[in-house]
Image (cartoon, rainbow, N blue to C red; front, side, top):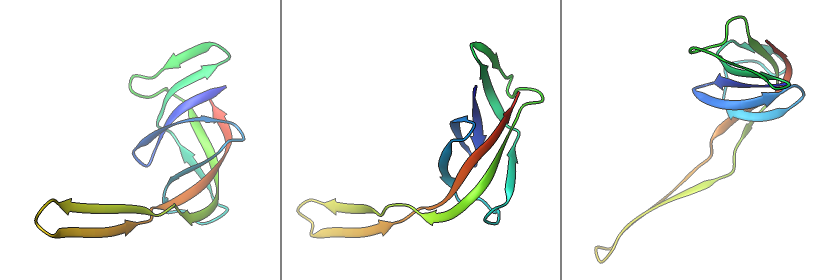
Length: 103
């Protein structure tokens, strides 16, 4: 059984027991969070598509940790003008462990 759920403005395909990284959530480490914006549920071939969400479906997850992602280098250059700008960015992430998918 898997579901497609919207978490922090992004869509993820989740299954029970799976770990995933999402944009930083305002929840304490070890807290249980619920997501009710379930867009699709597949229960062994029986697919239910929401309009826009599936009624009564929800996904519960546990916050494992808060981490920072890999560094991404942003480099701007204009040729023949002597203009160069270098900037780095690290995204704040939350690691979730999916406990239950309720359909």
